[in-house]
Length: 390
Image 1 (cartoon, helix red, strand yellow):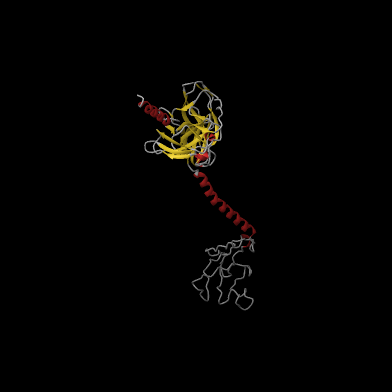
Image 2: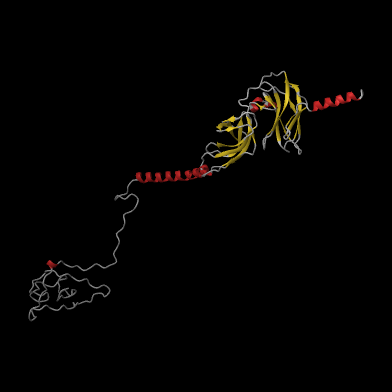
C-alpha cells in the first residue's frame, strides 16, 4: 500500500493538469489549455475537439470575459495582433501553440476560440495572465440571456426599382429563447452589414415585446443596404455585446443603371449633332432668290397643244357677204384653197378674223383691192383665199 500510494497521487496530478483550463459544453465544442496560468511573453498550447471538420478557427487571448458571460465588448477586448488561426482536422480536433499577450482591458481573461467561416460556434477557456490587472466585470443590464434556437434566414425579394439602383431590403428572421432568470422587455438588437472583408456597419433595431424566462419568440428585423450596393454581404446580429447570428447575402448588380448610362451615351451625342446642324443651317448664307440650299422648282411643261385664239363675244363681227349671191344668206363655209399645199406633218393654225375690210367688199373682188398684191395680202399666191369664217 505504501509503495502504491505515490503512484496513485501522480496519476491524479496528471489528470488534474490535463484538465486544467477546460472550457467545454456537454453537447458543443471544447477547448483545453496546457497551463491555466502564464505570463506575458510566454506561450500555451490550445487544444480542442468537437468542432466541425475542416473548419477555420481564430484563437485569441481576451480580457473582461468569463466562459459563462462570454467576451464583454467583443473582439475589442482581445489581443487581436497576437492571435493565431488554425484549421480542424477530419475529426474536428486541433492543437495550436498560442503566445500569451496582455489584452487591452483588465482580466478576468480567457482564451477565446471561434469559427471564422460557416455557422458560428465558440468556446472559452480560463487563463490567468500573470502581472495583468484584474477588475470586476460590468453589471449585466438584465438577468435575461438570449440564445438563438433556429437557423437565421433572410426573407424578401428585390423589385424592379432595385434593378435600377434602389436600395436592396430584406427581413432577418430568427427564433430566440430567454435562457436567463428574468424577463427581457423590448430588447435592442444591433444589425450589421459587412461587404467582403470590411468591418460591418451597425444599426440599432428594437423588438417590441416581453420575453419571459424559458420562453421563445420569433423575431423579424429589417435590413437595408445603401443605393446601388451589390456583391457579397454578411448580415450580423448582435445583442448585449455578443454575436447571435450571421447570414450571408448575395446582392445582384443593378443592370438597369448600366443600361441607362449606355442609352445616355447614345442619346446625348445624337442630340448635340442635331443641335449643331440646326445652328449651321441658321448661320449659312442665303443664295440669290431667297433660297438657302434648295434650287427653285422648274415649271412643268404641258403636253397639250395650245388652244386656238378665241375672241370675246363683243368683238365678234358679222360674216362678209358675197355680191354675186342672191338673197342675203350666209355663205356656206368652204375649205380654203391654197396655191401651194402646206406640209401634212403640221396643220396650219387658223387665222383669226380681223376688221381689215368693209362689210360689202370681198377680199378677192376688184373693189376690195386697192394696190398690187404683196406678201401680206390675202390674195397672195402663197396665202389661201378666205371665203368664209376661219
